[in-house]
Length: 495
Image (tube, rainbow, N blue to C red; front, side, top):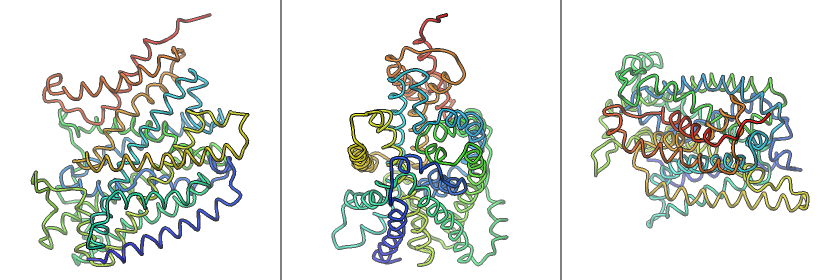
């Protein structure tokens, strides 16, 4: 087992690299560089950075661990993502560039009104706070379990270790914003992917097999089953595939966090090129994660190592499968490779969230950018306060996740997204594909009612649908129900 002090030293060195990059890129930073990187971000760096944003610590830990129970079914969702990214590239990006947006929810202002803009922005803020909180919780809990719980005679409190992680992020993001993140996230995405590749190499080396032989074993394993066609099950192919399309459109195309970097590209063609190569990379990298999952379970069997088991339920703790093997059984090299990937995933998945949450609150909710009574210095001060405020809120959400999360976190993240992104999907679909005008002040009521109705339906799904299990299509059902409620609020047609 690697010494906790070695792991901490490794993380500190990694952070120092980010801090130096943050300092260099944030010199002479302005509002334009904070929000849109002066519209000069190289498309290839944006594409690489988006890999880290999309994958995060959840994919790094939860997806390989879940292979033991769900096999390659996650690939069905990712193939849906690929189609969703095509829709984003050819429908949403042209709209955002034509309107010259900084926050994508400014579109809702021009289409429906100020209340709808604030509603869309607040749903994004809630979605991203919960999503980022879940991702950070997973990474922080692994570091806590394997490092801080073993560092001193008395355990370091989880709240303190999370505070340290968030403080480090705050140091290199609060000033440079998107201009800094384009560069730091590129480095972190490369480290994340490198962590997966080197972990595969380490396992095959320990098992004394070639990569070609490992590939054959993965392909012949029952765990590599990818497509499932039982209509009643939650992992039915078309549920996951179509749900993946809508999830990608909502969680990427209607998400300020993912789109703000795209809007920092020099032109629309460069932004579209970025999305194209990013979508291909996502499919390839996901296959590597799933293959790693099969190899992890093979190695547990090969070395006769006991899987991490929940003492209360007797079930495998899938989110501990990868870290337990890497840090306790595969040697120092594998442990440091794992920490490298996990650290990259942790910082990459959350640092940009703080910037984009600040953007949405600053522009959409508070309207500070349009307040001509404030000096540029005061605007910068408010922006910094909002950035710090979201850091504190994120800290609280991580502590709540620690108390509540009981399943594989990838499932929790996708379910949360189904409830929170459904209203955004409904608003943009009505705005883009109809000429309906909504009663602006009543929009929040419909957007809150839709997810509540979906939750009640999901809670009573057995009584309503029998053996049919609701899966990722929940986001579509949410969007349709919310959309129907919104259409009841349409204004009478006028000449």
